[in-house]
Length: 475
Ligand SMILES: C[C@@H]1O/C(=N\OC(=O)Nc2ccccc2)[C@@H](O)[C@H](O)[C@@H]1O
Image (cartoon, rainbow, N blue to C red; front, side, top):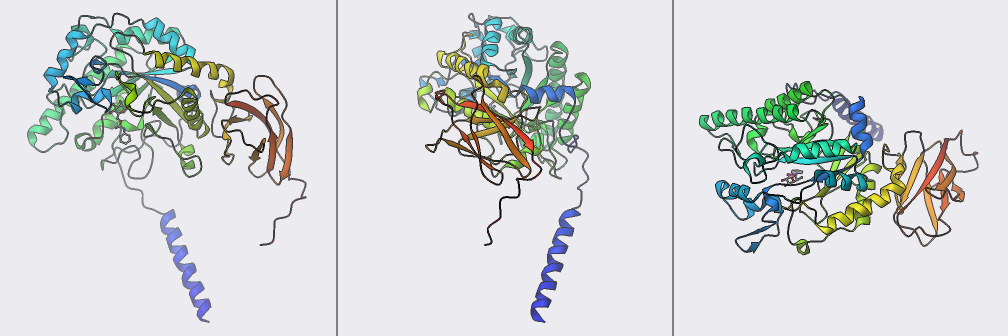
């Protein structure tokens, strides 16, 4: 009798919890998520299919390159003003030295093309407030430097001419602007910040008008209380740009909802068109599979944490090309994009390490890009040898980074899926496919090691059932 009562109580408890979860009350929001699931329009499909981008962090910070008054700071070079506690007016005097005589937008575009980057994200204005375009709403622009020219406009044209999409990075936080506020603590703060938001609107409209081929706005510098308190403005900015540029994509980092919640609103729904929280980190391929439910884009630095040009890369670990390629494939294997960062020098050229990296990535992408571009999460359980991706026609790719001593690559297929064939991308060499258990296979390794991460393309089929020869152990 007692056990029956306990069972009944347990059932009621579970039932009530389940019911409560299923009927979790929606929090009414005026400035919450606007998309319902992944956008499927052509512009978003192109964003997704691009998969590999390059970041360009270029600004006044490239001039000191991490050093101020003879002291080298190990922190991110584009934050040097903050590390060295340089007043805005002193920092902005760097404009007098802005003269990138080696800048050649066509060369930059060829480098991105050679790397296999399908899009480039450019810092139109970073936290320092220096504008790479001749904005009429600020005096801190390229127009008021010895160089004078609209470098942003030259970049947009050169990248577009190479068939590369251009995305704009835009920092809302602006250390040069007297009306910026980190928090709103008084009526004066509120009035000043309203002026600042109007200034920001004007610059965004200016960018959208001057450069209408821009495909995306990647907002940054939106973590302060002042922005979180003005969720209405973040929704307005997104809507304004989408009305001006139909199809444009906007990252989640811009948005704050009615309650100051960022990236995901108070109902747990993604704001913006893709999540942009994976900066110098990636979701776990086993524990974080939830990210496959939405679009997302990661970005990464080559040193541990340098976005702008830093003169001394010996201060932290510098990733090898294969370590960068691993991160690119890792992101795509979980349905995300990856943006690899470059910090051009003050003279407009790139450091040799970055040129070499772009070349190395490009060589690999040229050989194996079929497993990256327009690919997505495959739905196969992660294995130690590397990552899976899935192509648009249902082909599954194995990108092998860690070849096992067993010389057998284990593949466990989702229920009802069987492996028909396996072939090495490039040579077409057929791999042996040996079924070892229900939904489990051993794929042989290439006859001759490709001495680089390689790709095996699987032909899979929805199996009627695996011959019924397997019996589950009675445990
Ligand atoms: C891409 C990077 O973006 C930044 N900041 O990013 C973040 O603050 N990222 C962040 C913050 C909170 C949570 C997750 C990521 C900038 O400060 C940095 O100079 C660089 O431009």
